[in-house]
Image (cartoon, rainbow, N blue to C red; front, side):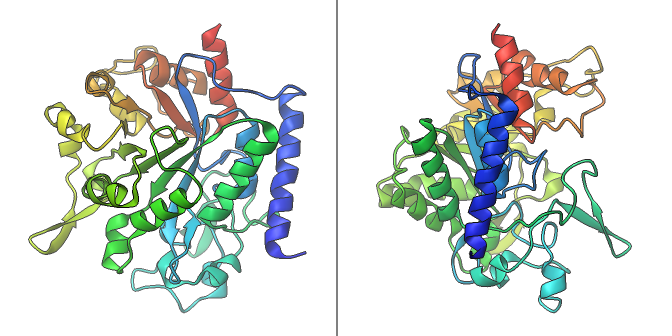
Length: 364
């Protein structure tokens, strides 16, 4: 049995386990209006992020969408991995010790697909004094069991296959990682992503897929050039963060410089943003007045209200029961604050079962 067969077999086993966890009746679509739960990198609170096993578990938990983060390999393949480097979630430093760049990182774009598939994938970790320290210590043990990175096409086939056999229509929530970086390296990740989506039948706003990115200049390019040229018109979301993250760079007078996300947070610009984005994806903290918010007293700002006024949905990220802010005492309070108090249309979470259960209780 080859590595891919083992991975798919393990994913199917995870799906069977998930079925037993939720009982004989499968958990179905979300229950409260049009609010949705998005499985952030799959059921990443329970299994290593973005593995097929994690996606299978999240699928059976009853989510509306499964997220795919994408990066490109040296041989132009799209792989599902959160970062455009490999050293946070694999043993790449052990197997290819001389392939790091000057910054010490091992970039996806410097490896072929075969090389990447030779790596062992694990729960995320940081290096502290040369030792790997698991970011979330109570999650799946580092390098426990065997997990592998897979391609975007392989994940689409897996989800479409589950939709066929399970009688559901679970959607894709696709993010291109650092389009600006790929452009610097001579690759058009957005074009490659759209071409794969078109190959598998996702071409219109009725397709069950959402295309998201932090890169607003690239989103404009996607909407005004790529999609028209490919005969596509998909739902899109612009992701929001703070400037300290330096998540996106743009070309200004021939030089790459950090993108100013304050532009995207200014309501005066929402009419323009809505020309390119059907929705916004802020960090959930951006929905609250953090100077006034405290435990037992959530103060909501106008971000969601302003987005709705311009016809955009809001899907914040990321609720984690093991990384709660100090203004809530449990994960249900955070779901309440984001989905009910702030009136977001959905939310990304590492614990999809908890989000689905919250919406079901709220509907009653």
